[in-house]
Length: 128
Length: 128
DNA sequence: ATTGACTTTTACGTATAAGTCAATTTTTCC
DNA sequence: GGAAAAATTGACTTATACGTAAAAGTCAAT
Image (cartoon, rainbow over all chains, first blue to last red; front, side):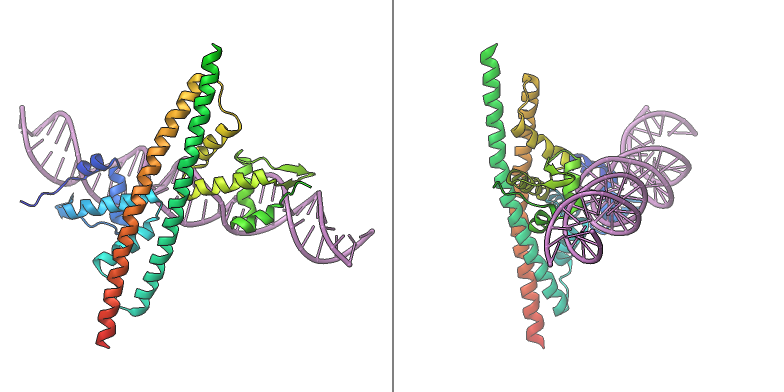
């Protein structure tokens, strides 16, 4: 049987527009099959879209996401390319760790904001 | 004495341009003092800039950063406003937690990418 | 064969968050 | 006090990631 998805099924599941998925195809991130002109998304495409959106949430650019995806499909054969890629991977890793720290700190700050709100609410609530 | 910083000191420290800091001022995120027309940044401004850049790294928009900053300066007096803010805080918290999960997963993936590279390198290395 | 819901392509438009440039002040330093 | 360095402003430009509109094509069901 080999299940496939229509474009709108996926837009609904992931909360994106058809334009977005077609854009990702134009950018070479996904390559759904076709029946006539209509795109047929396979489970593999669906998983890829999940990855793309995850990258997007983290703030990767399309180009960066493309780089990462490409390695899975087809790790480069040239030593220079491989080393370049590994350097990039290291950089990304550092960047992500920094982001994680940023997130931790901001989460702590949100706690403060919330507390300030509660205090203020209490002040107002008592007075009335 | 009360130390203050010039705009270029801060641009160097944080790796942003003067235009960026002025942009943040235009957007109402910071309010450095002036001596004549020249901006004088106090430690408080500096800390604020750190926060702004942290927010930026995480991917917050200027508007969102402004919202968060505003609460510190001046928590709103209206109950409705406070409740609205707390709702936003909750949403942000969820968003950040999602982002943290995304980061964890992507870090794990980068490990795989790296391993694929190493494997490939070994393959090539042995053959030559 | 028509309706309705969906999908396609192409092309141009838009918002965000700055970056760039150039022309002036302003400050600093000797 | 005058040159050099630094800072300011306004206007314009840029890149990314889609949005939107138009004009057809597709398909299943009535």
